Image (cartoon, rainbow, N blue to C red; front, side, top):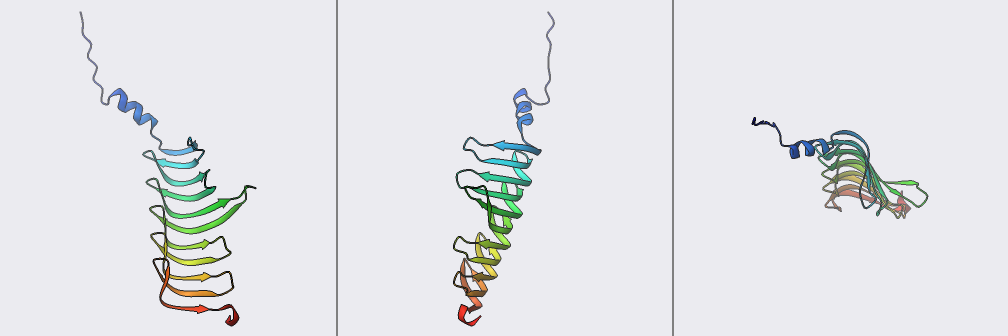
Length: 156
């Protein structure tokens, strides 16, 4: 009786896993909770350009990803009940946090443009307030710090 011997360079399990990994462009991937991602993948992680939609929070991120995290330029939107997008943040990201130059719109008609670090206003920037006043200067850990000028609405 002859015995056949098979030599696999990879095990059948490893082969199946390799086939199931996502790489390159994909149409759309849906999560069980209703979230969706359309875009590029690398080694089973979001990587390259893509659009992520979070169903529960109603947020949409459109921009670049690296190793499964928002990284590079991108825009974060809030989507209302009429499917209208309202821009929340537009700028640079690093490790899922605002980092570098960016513009942030707040709910109460306030606006910030300037530098970010670790998801906080840090560096030089301008904050426009609802009452019409504006602060331009340095920020550290999301607080006005260092040199800056506060212009009150009455004196603009």
